[in-house]
Length: 69
Image (tube, rainbow, N blue to C red; front, side, top):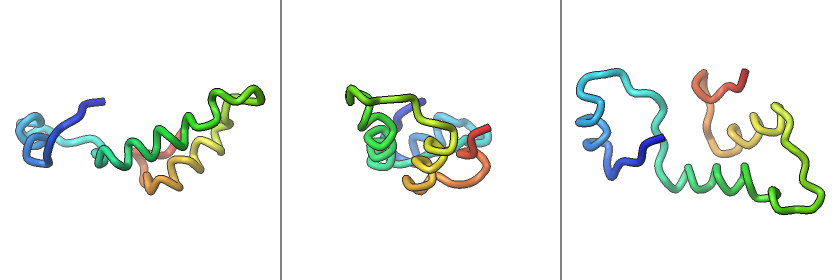
């Protein structure tokens, strides 16, 4: 994961290469909160693949790049 200050900064860094997925930092924060919000619960259990996929979908992260195997 790399953090950039703007789309122009991403384009310069890519130097003509094809980009992967890019998301705004606010969306990343939303994803991180959803992914880890229950981690400190004494009843915590690892999420299933379907639960993790639902978290990605709810954060608006759809498409082939965001499909879990």
